[in-house]
Image (cartoon, one colour):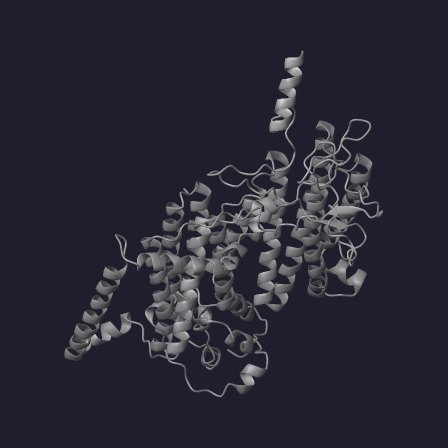
Length: 605
């Protein structure tokens, strides 16, 4: 017993007492690294005191902060056996941010919320690796062709430019490990088919529509979207990627010009030598033979032509930016399908069906009236409204067109909030919306019939032909909605887009200006007046039809139609045909002022 007491006294004197070590940070032994500092807790702010400072101006410097332990000595136990002040990582610390601080100042603290991420962070792909040599070469070729071929108009050059553009996208997608789907290949082929419209037609409005539709199909081929949000937002992908694509292309070019196995230096020097040789020997051969000079002049673009060098340089830069943006999108597309809204909150059967059933009844009443009026003829219209048949047709067409578009909007909203708790709800939705679609088809037919009557009286124009084509396409959309109700709506967005592309292609290849000229000439032969001034403002597509007029009507109609002598890559087939006609039968110099300001009666031939 005494030995134990003496042993304790000896250990007490030497400082080797048994028991727990102090809670402070131990000093490092010689040769050992210092312990890492503990991470600081997230910043706290006082709730409701955003404009004040977080610490008091008169706080003591030796007073520990709230929730922090003193590192110099262990916490003294309280009378109950629990620590009076727990360290920050202790489980005894309350997690409620609304609790008052330990200093007793009565203020509440809360953590600052994290900033919301940008809207595209969830759907944007990771930045791709720098472009490879094939992608850079395709972009350079696109820039060169843009500067050389786009300064004189659109025709075959649009299709020529699309080829290296598509090749660059394929190279970039393959380098990123993306394999094209069948749907993407179909969209790409459809976009190239739409570029046949500027090759065929000279009219600017179908050409512009076809080029925009081709760009939309190309964007869908790059992204591979399937939902409505993707179909509608896909054309924004290459536009939003221009800035990142330029940086991406610059990094790829720097890597390829820094030396190594894939250095662009030898290729650039080879291209430069080839250009110098072609220019020198081509100039010598052209000076030696006039026939060869004419052939060379027809094939090689005239850089010093009407567009000028600055304009062509701008087109080259624009082509380079477009090529890099398309390739970057193919390598890292934005997943626009992820931004689509989910299904809406389903409504009850009565709440959902009652407005639509009443709308069906209204449509049915209108269809019954239309059938009675249109079938009984002009006498009923004149007796009931005091209008001629053509005036009655013109008066209601635009309202019916707007009603068709509005009905499609109602159907889209109704589908999102339709009840979907079981088979009975599905049957109710199909019955109500199917009836509405069928009645909408009758409204479409009524609108087309009205415009047909009006055009039979007053002739065909660009506006009338365009709105009839638009109304017919809306009817096709209604048919696709009916098919989606039977077979499912998974393919509906892409089916609607495909129908629009087919409609644009058919509309452009039909040569609307040629149809307008032929329709008005047929009406003139049947005894109606002829608006020669309107026909003189058509494009070269109308030249074959107007060439059948007698003089002086022929020369007065063809004099205002410009058929420029453009290079082969900027000349459409309609322009070439019109040029041959006007070369074989030149326009005569007749006084045309009276003929162009007044309607030509049928007696003037």
